[in-house]
Image: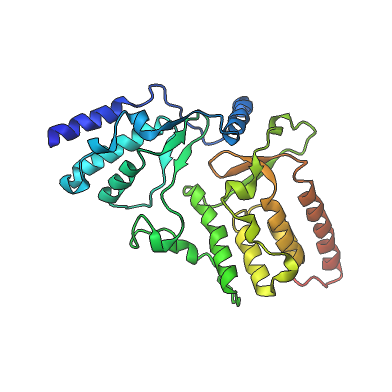
Length: 303
């Protein structure tokens, strides 16, 4: 068996792309046009797709049952599998400390799945549907449970549907496991040609179902506050995240409007959009900034 494992590992490694793309931490200006062109092709499903098994040149039957392999053999195969796919800019979303046996079985299960092959950015293959009751990682390693703790810890009487929506919003953090929060960047000059190819609304990038948000007048105070805080927590460093606390209604509606902003995503936690898309938020920022300063002078600012 050991001889077969060595040969299987060598076959997997031999399938690696020779000149692998090495992503940089920040998007370079010199390549931003190519980046947006690729994003547009991705949105139009024009990027090449290939079955993972075809990329590796292997079928599931060639992988021995997990029960016949020891821990070291499982690790060797998993590492070769993931490193080879990484050379095609394809990564797999696993929780930390997941046993090699489970990892191996899940990787083999993806051999029939097709993935897009891109040069700028990564495609992430996911296994979880964010439902702890059917978690493929098992209850011990389920990562969804951490999002239950994302419900705001201040004393709110949240309805059950609001709790579920807040957990749904907070699950977006899973897209940036190496970062704490998302960022939003945009230009304030007149030259937006690099951002002409805006991708899709932020809520689509974050896999947030915008249809789950009711109209503001149909939501109670506690639910409104909890939902707005969950969205703000995704972008806590943005200026608008503190200025809109002047009005709870505006806070809720602005947060939802932010999710509808069209942007491109660099797969590292940063959204790029144009100043035109952000004009609405600029107006809100300056309006409430003026209100805040005026009320400070009158000693009538409640925050």
